[in-house]
Image 1: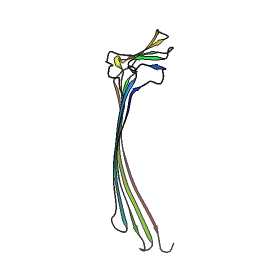
Image 2: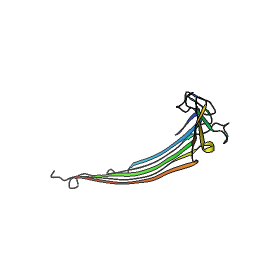
Image 3: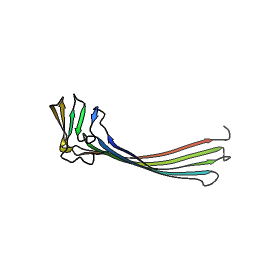
Image 4: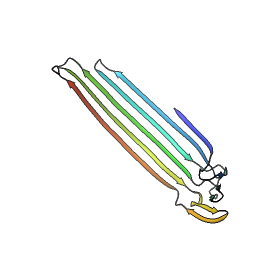
Length: 177
């Protein structure tokens, strides 16, 4: 499956009036691939294999006409935002998982027995990438200069983790139960 959300002029919700140039461009693709194989190998044995892949990128980009010289200008009293978006952001992420499981059942063999077993493995990646033009946002209060917000960008945070799970469950009942 493929999904894409296009928001060409996403506004910062903190201000009543945000110019088109100060809005974000959000083109967000997402992919999902899945596979499944299940088989009853014998009357007593069932096997199941699954794999899944999910990739998404959540971006907030500067508009096409914005150059590195443009900075974000916010006026708190007038509730306006002009110049460029406050920052540029990307959140690329993906998950890959696969699992295998099975169930074996045997009846009338000194009672009934059921063994279930499985394994799951997964790896995930998630990152946050920020960039602020000129490393500053400028704030005014009713047209009067108020603050300069300074940022040390570009910055990147990455999170990678792996999961592994093994399961086994044995159930049985003897003839005397």
